[in-house]
Length: 339
Ligand code: GLV
Image 1 (cartoon, rainbow, N blue to C red):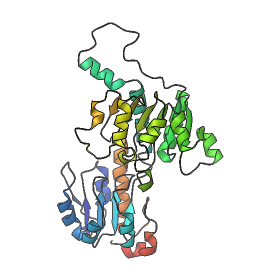
Image 2 (image 1 turned 90 degrees about the vertical axis):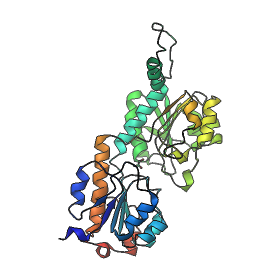
Image 3 (image 1 turned 120 degrees about the horizontal axis):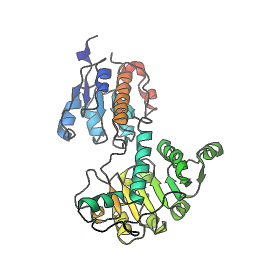
Image 4 (image 1 turned 45 degrees about the vertical axis):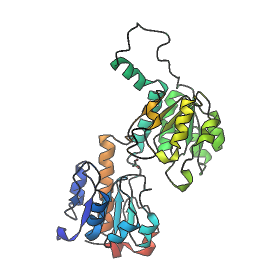
């Protein structure tokens, strides 16, 4: 097999084992800088490519697909695919794949880490020591936080990650309520020990609210001023899903005015976020730079899965996780086979 015949562009260096998978079918061209390829370069790079392995930092739109006339597969190393114009891809017979499943546990772990850190003010406590403010002996009132054990957790979204969070909090004896456009069967609800409630009821009743819905048109600013006003003043808000689901200005205002107690935020309306973001000024926040899936295991599995998906399509085989299933009707797997 002549490996130079199949052309693939990878938009960043990933964790190693994925390369072995790609090298089965091609000699990939890899963008080796830490920052994403500038748009102009990306548009150039896709011109002669059969496959593109990208991240959520690249905008994969019609303009790009028009340049990449030979593209048969776009494989993103992310579970989210809001950066890809699915309709444009399907219309052109381009297979779009993502990496669900392999980051579920890492994101669920991180959600709990953020929830606990926010409830117990861990980052404030860390800064307190480093800034040499710990000058008095043990105190009954220093850095008081909120209990987690036995409290009510409201999950907005009960997909893979929401369910993995629900499974973890049994040990904290939490009462879990959820809202989702899809209600789970009574069997699943019993097994997870969760109760379905209307959206507003989840907001009103929960001590902790955690977001686990995808970024789609319908979830844009799903949490805004109205929703924040419904939450308890003692509530703690956690977002490890996508920044655009929450109106950041409204969240900052609610935190400042103590309409809610605190927030743990890993995802932002724009990333990297503006350095003047009002959330930076608030002590009642724990802020991190979109790292919920950032474990060596998880990122290795994500890289491997995105490479496997890409290689499968190039071989004319069904990829493990195809997003736009309708594409099968537009261009069959035997038609996209490149090797
Ligand atoms: C990360 O946020 C992902 O979508 O994989």
